[in-house]
Image (cartoon, helix red, strand yellow):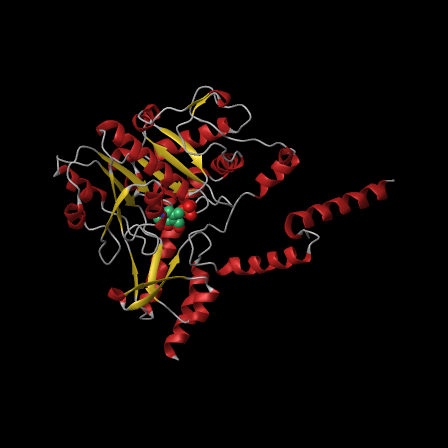
Length: 409
Ligand SMILES: Cc1ncc(COP(=O)(O)O)c(C=O)c1O
């Protein structure tokens, strides 16, 4: 009997180990596909996704607790005193409360949600901004955004039927204040989207200089500033440059951040935060069946992503994210230094983890999944690496060797 129970225990342990690490789905196609990504994941250098997700025990808990058969939905406002009860809004609210001081908001002047993505956060920023400005001035705003900003902002301006002025950026990707000044439409409120890490060059729009442009133009009846900090808004709060993403220091009204980039949530998600004043100046939409004043855009909202965020806050938290941010900054500097050392033309913006450089062969581009760009001011064909948690010095050395070989051919 004793031997039998020991054997049984070993069998259970083996079964658990295989469940955890290499469980077959029972579908050959799916299993083969997983193998491809387990390998490719090792050299994903070109896109801003944290490949070191720390959600393994979250999934164990989720299944162990039988959560997969409980269908929750965060429809409604998590920041009210009467959150919708078939939801994880209580945890969503705690997530927003955790991030409130990290983005320089105060407890009594903040509103926020866990979004479906950075784009969803920008959608709210632009929508809230437009509503706020129309409410204040009775005039339609003009949206200003740099030509290096993420395309979602241009798409959303179109979707929301807003007049948009695309402002030229300098060679490194920052919106040019003089160009903004030339493009201002007098007598119309201004809705500006600041790129906090432009997608290809990793440029941060100089908010102080751009805000000064508006200060020089009192004929602009009102200004709303939304920060698109999809990637940089993840790591900057955990560095000494945290004031860059601070509402208090930079005076923006709202900010959007992706959850699947720096934070390591394993599928699209994000954060949106704005001042309470902005929230209070949205149009009301009382939805009795949800117990809520629905000011946000979406009805159904994911109830699992806030739980993952909450889990990571407990597990990784300020200490872990600070360590990761420091490693990313160190590896970014290392990558640039190694590229310089082999004479490979490369550039990096201040505060950025994105290094762009002369585009190598298609072989290297494909192996490392490098994102591609083009700019004649830098000699034409370019590629970039976004130094995320998985881009270590050892991996950088391997890439540098490959580039060296290519150079000496
Ligand atoms: C600057 C910037 N904004 C917005 C986005 C869109 O974010 P998401 O993919 O989370 O919708 C990205 C994506 O790479 C980005 O780089």
